[in-house]
Length: 265
Length: 251
Ligand SMILES: Nc1ncnc2c1ncn2[C@@H]1O[C@H](COP(=O)(O)OP(=O)(O)O)[C@@H](O)[C@H]1O
Ligand SMILES: [Mg+2]
Image (cartoon, rainbow over all chains, first blue to last red; front, side):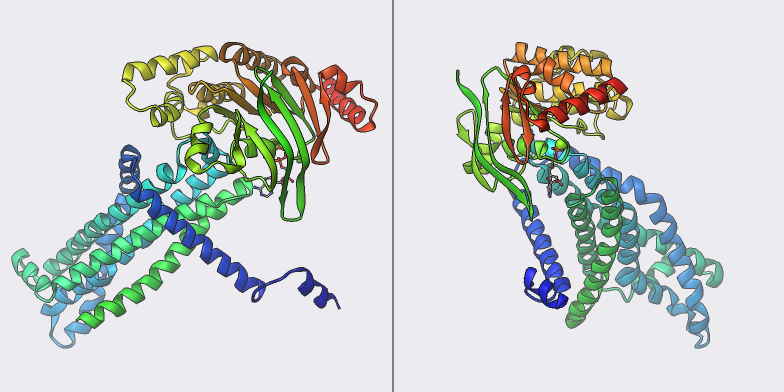
């Protein structure tokens, strides 16, 4: 009886959960369209864009340096024993470099940035939303999407690939240090070994990946922040949801991009 | 006298929650209209509809002769330049200094201003709210009353014809309240604005209002001068008055 009543009062297309999910999907798509519309319609807030790029680099550079270096160093160290048993330690630089460029550098960088940058964008926009700063922009005839969202999304999309490149460099430094202390490899010989199996497709894939991840982090952070409600509680939720959702999407994109690029190999 | 704001048969609901039900309200030119009402009755919703921040469900909202419910985005933005909105919690941009807060609407809406002209405009509005000394401070360094003043200054920089104040004295001590009331009256004198002042503070209503309207059950059944409204024998009015009086005694 009770079951019957509730299904009468609330009309769902599917179940309530699926409906919510579909609505969320549509809202996200609308937000994405709005972003593209406002990006292409002129009056670019250049100064705010530069501010955001600086903020992203500044907040994550140290962590990325450290993580990149440690990843390269440790990955080399851990891979050595299995190659040693074949007497194939000379393959070590090339093996690790492939791993770094194809997978680790973009992924490690974007996961760090999802945590540091995504959460801070979500929290900032969320708090601007719940304290009516977004409304204040709107009533002063300034487009908040243009000022807040376009600048931040473009900033992550451009900065995160640069940071990924830098992370790769730091990782390679780690690899070289490990290899040169263990195998006594000279720097030119190391470069030769490291890059002889890297092809342009690998580099392009790394660029495309990190652009996609950067865009994801920016747009998800902005979307979650922009839709924050319920005061300070909502701000925390927006920050948290930004990290979870952008990490989730990054993993999905990773699988997808790897599949697609493998068709071209 | 001309009407600056004309609200007719306005309806607004959020889901099942009906907030405004056939609300009617006129604000004449150069008039301070105070809107009183308990919290959660829809006062903020009303002025957000006027400023185009929320859509109306039904009814007409005319601002300076233009029907807000029918304006496209561009026309709405042009109208917004003539509307100043003072938010309940001031809504200052907290990553920017006071100067940057004030410049923000100006440099984006009035193109090709020289640095000198911008500085002059900023100094002028800061002076008119009495806070020239705070020009390089961050919002977090200001007191509640100072934030309110800067929020008002940020709207004055565009020379608005209409001011919408959302609870301008909420959360302030009595002396600061008095100063804000004075400022509201000065703004009306100096900038020739027509205003809606939302409050549940009767002192503020009495000090600033040419007329008052009380929001009960989604509409403004009680309108008139302060004395007219509060001599009405309706028990709801009497309750509202007594409650406020007791609150003020406590202060
Ligand atoms: N954006 C919104 N979404 C859903 N409900 C809202 C929204 N804004 C206001 N409300 C609801 O409308 C009612 C009136 O709110 P409001 O106008 O803020 O009250 P007040 O008179 O205190 O300013 C409240 O019950 C509030 O929960
Ligand atoms: Mg309110």
